[in-house]
Image: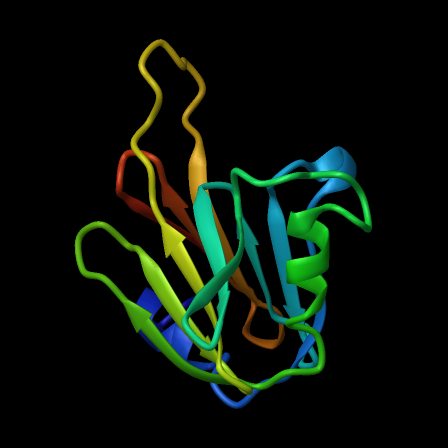
Length: 145
């Protein structure tokens, strides 16, 4: 049974190193980040990767596999430590501060009008504790684990 809140679970990523960061190609702008402790964040909503305050790529940029703006920026996060995580209350936007002046900003989006299937903005998986949180496009949090 999960006894950690979403905020507490996110803080478990602090100090962990990113081993895998990918977006682009067939996945489009979906961004997947996995850490050395096998935790992960899947991001389907709008995001930005910054370095030294300058935007390297956003979810709206070129999604060409391996060489597109999204793919290149995502891979730059690999082997870097997650230093700080901020979660916006009520809307669940995330701001992740990463070593060497990198940042990942995640901005949740509303459920598209006419979309019958409920969509997610992002998901967090803490593998060793079997924690799984989903933040929906209706700005609700679902928990499994």
